[in-house]
Image: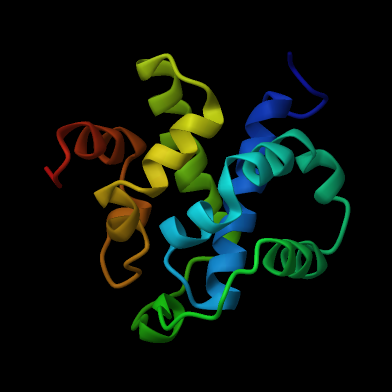
Length: 153
């Protein structure tokens, strides 16, 4: 179903979900897989299903609510602090993950939330989140093929 914007509404919902994951990860200093796993499938489905509602709220407040609800502890992973170059925004990274997750869901014929969990728990997530590398701004096809091959090509 196509929304009123340029993209499918569910694509926008996935973009928001991935951006929120990145926002929470930065705020709590955790790797993305840990945040995804701590949130769990049920909360991820809720975020994805209600993303258009959450998007209307302040992302800082939404993130605080989910951090508290999922009891996400403060970690020690700080890819923003470690970055020696221009830091991509949580929206920039959300877009990278959205594209990859859509491709994985379509090619593997699985639900979007299942693809999200797979992608964030794969080796590629660590590569995307290394802001001192070039992976996060590589061509989406390259990122997807690397994911498929389970190694950087």
